Image (tube, rainbow, N blue to C red; front, side):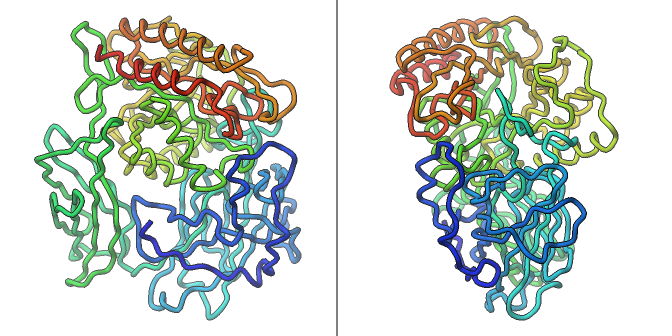
Length: 602
């Protein structure tokens, strides 16, 4: 990466006692757990789609304390925690439950490099689950609610000379509150997993001028051969100028200038299209000027691609990529780790699941009721995988709720719960809008907390017309959005069909294979069906794939196989939970999947 990492002294707040940290518990772990360096935890630049040259990583050993809700900041801490791993995880070095009756306190010190003098200092959090209050030198600088999106504060006014004190207080009710929380529950079993609380993505700082770039969002239109670039800024006036340079390697493809606050439209006449087969990305440099002087510059990237729907020659509505029929096919990806829970142990681990999904012959990933760090989406952009992005479920999410297939009874949320859902869903969309791999928004899954579906779906579609909306994957169905999504286990089954929208199989499969030595727990492991060896599982997988391809000819336009890896008590992954064993015969798996991805072209 181009980013320059300034190494930190961890004295004062943590006392330099690195040897005290070790993974906790006796659960299985990944190979990457052994590669963690507490002096250099997840050192990669956290946000490659908007990269500045100068930054500082605040990951590492912090002090922590768990105290009852409402108590003052602790005078004495309980020990050390390795940030950014959730307090319940092995890799945190703590592995304790938080619970809704407690708050989690973090503290550390840091210094601001002398080279940042005269700059504004932004303090960034990749994600904190769920409510975070942030204090710098005993001054509360801000608060954020939401477990899945990045947030930042300009902490410049609160800095002093020398060492700075940073305190974070977190509350997380998991499934006792209305907040989105995905698969987390206080009593894990079956498809429900261990709680995740506190800081679980990188904490970092960067220096900027008072006038600076806040985000870069590039929206392609391949029919018009243009790229629309929106560059929100901070501290600017209409007299300030934004410049965008689009490049293919060293060759400049297009340039444009606009007043701050105005969108740019770049002509891209000789387009190189992005697709899973050819994931081409243009480099993009974005600069901000005031009275001719450079105020900020970020490196970004963009892609020319289009996702849409269209009726084929046989009258079946199809998903399309770049105006061609495209059968979306990929695994249900939960994004859980036995040692880090929500957090991959290293960047090598983070990219591993994505690369293996590509190696397995898929062209898509359904990111299931979780949101990942920014680098995960950049890897999907670079490697070439479409992403269906779920909204994490929350509020009352009934386990195995019965529902009618069309216009079923929906949940009634409190005004506070509804407002929170809308706010967090918008934040997730805003966060992921720049990533070309994100092709489909999924606001609801299987009637879990589903409410006001037509209204939510119509708003989602209007807010981002450049992507498709899967209104309710396997849930209560309304004739809104861009597709009808069915779930059926274990084998594919086309039991509903709609003439005016593509029909997809949002979940199927779940073929189980428990492997001794790679299990989260000794018993109560399950899959929808179970076999005894890799050949048997691969044979069954192939049988389901053959059935799926026949159904694709008559109606299905996409499918999601459950799932990428085992997760806790679920043993129906393509890989074990510790990622040490690929459970299917990989060469056969790849050949089968490539046939499925190309089924509409046969």
